[in-house]
Structures are given as structure tokens and as C-alpha cells.
Image (cartoon, rainbow, N blue to C red; front, side, top):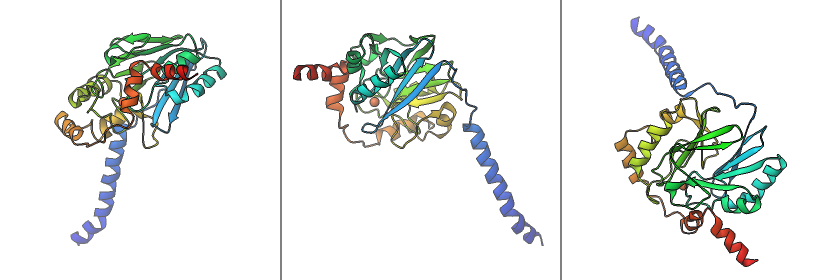
Length: 276
Ligand SMILES: [Fe+2]
């Protein structure tokens, strides 16, 4: 009799426990979304060759705009959109000295005179503005704060906009992943500490926008990555072991991209000028 009752009840109990566990996990990762303020423009663009995201942000009233991580092949598109929207590009910023594509900042400076190139001083690259940790990048009434997040490269930074509850993490933190740490002064231990100290301490509902995604995803949150990132949710020791065993091939573009990005993409622009 008792066995019959147990057999009848067990699947129901198991289903209930399973559902509750799923709900607990959902509660851990789902957060209320803070809407953008009405005067904040946000656009996300994608380069399918390098899977790079470029972000256009602007003050809708003041018309000042910035671009984060532009790609040289898309500089004409960026210019066209900026002009169509009646915006003025103040800064073209990089999260770090990329190894997989050439930055569009040099070409954008040529296409949109008055625009300044921006990167961290610790990147070792040349630019009009060399950012220090915790500097602010202003456009209109909005601003981004600069958080040092080295580890993928020595000069990686994350740009945070507290008012809009968003951050641009470059390659320090990708959706369910992170940038490799085996070149350009990379260090798995440094990257782990950067992400845990600078990004995972942001409020859990902050949306995170990476420099790349290779699986069609566009955005994540602090809560999601803390719980679900298969590398960075682990211990430091496990993370270092994972990163040491990725066995990644030598990056195809690195020998071309890094020298060009050292001068914020101007290398390529100078070559073009010479050809004319
Ligand atoms: Fe990178």
C-alpha cells in the first residue's frame, strides 16, 4: 500500500522539486531591466568577419555622440548613420588594442574631422586621449566611467554608464566566456581578478555589452554571468587551469591588426593615402 502511494507521488514530488529548482535559478539570474533615459541613444552594430560589436551612444538633445570599438571596414557606414541622425562624433573609443580587426578610429578621424581617438594609456597605443583608470568620458550630459580590467591585454578597460545601468566590457568578459589570455601581456589570474573586482561588483541588473559574440547573442547581465559564465563563475585556480588548456590557434589577424591598432588604425589610413 505504502509502496503504491510512494510510486504514485514520487514523479509529482520530483516534478515540483525540479520546477522549484528552475525557479530558484531563474530568480538568481533574472533581473528587472532599467530602461534607458529618453535622451540616451543606443545602437549596436555587428561586423560578421570578426564578430565585433560596435556601439553608438549619443545625447539625443545635445547631439554629441561616441562610438565604442569601431571597425575600419565599417567606418563609412558609421559616418553615414551619424550624419543621418544629425549627430556629431566627439570620440571614437577602443576598449583595448584589438588583435582580430583594425580599429575604425583612424579612418573615422579622417571622415569626421573633430572626432578624437581614445584608448587607455596602459594599452601602449597612440591616441588623442589616453585614459587613466576611473577617468570619465563625457558626451552631452552623459558620461562613461573608465574601469581598469586588464588580463586579456594589459590595457583593457570597461566603460560603465551608471545612469543607464550598462557596461561595455570589451574582451574582458564575453557572454558566457572571456577573451583569451595568452598574448599581448595577457594573464588569466589578472583577468579573473579584474572581472571579479570591477565587473561582478556592479549591481546585478546592469546589462553588459561585450566586444564580440560568436553565437548570435547581443547582451547579458552581471547576475547572469556571475551564475552562468562557465569560466568566470569558477574558482581562480580552476579558471587559470581552464585558460591554460584552451589550445587556441595563433590569431589570424594579429600580425596585421596589432601594429595598425598601435596607432589607432592610422597605419592603414596612411597606406591608403600613399596609394592615392
Ligand atoms: Fe581582444
